[in-house]
Image (cartoon, rainbow, N blue to C red; front, side, top):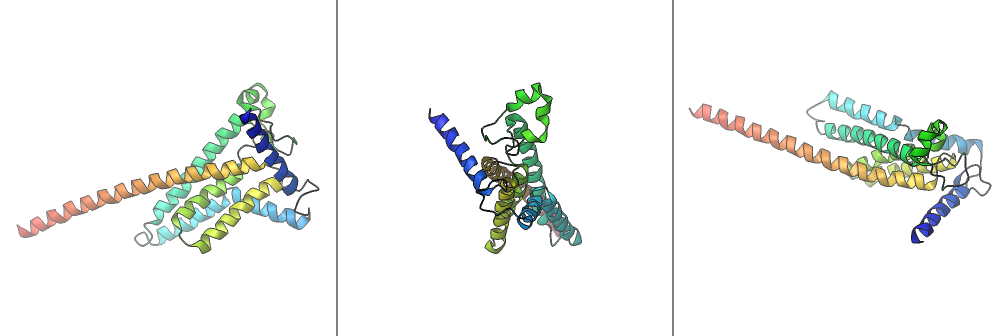
Length: 228
């Protein structure tokens, strides 16, 4: 009974935000205009991986220009790449397992068909049944979380979070996702980014520690050679 009430509450949240954010709804807070639609179609592209690709290229270029000065950037480049790969693997597996219908084909947010239905009916492999979770949202938020762990400046963090929120809103506005698809992606991306950040930091520490040991051994060896 409690589970049913919780489920109904979640779906009522989906319906509420869909009613007030999607451009197809007359109750939407966004007046459907060409400018608004163009804005959200532009913003949503930040969830397609272009931002991550550009960021990786910039960081890699800096590192290659001066490897000694920007040696620490290797850690950040790896963190972004591994987070991107992990979020894409996770989101695609979950899309297939849940097989949720997109809001563009149903007004009922409770339409989860599941993997068995998808296997039985080949038509379910179409993009209309992969709503949960949101791929665009998990892509941009994975990178935002990683950058937020690295960057301490609020002047950079705040615009990143605003960008992430706008990308999530764009998916609802463009009738591609339910609110819970977007929220689930933000939460998932946080834990994925956190795990990867910790793993890379740990490995980076081990590598540097090993380098220090090797350096000390070589230094002591040279010192003995000089004495002898």
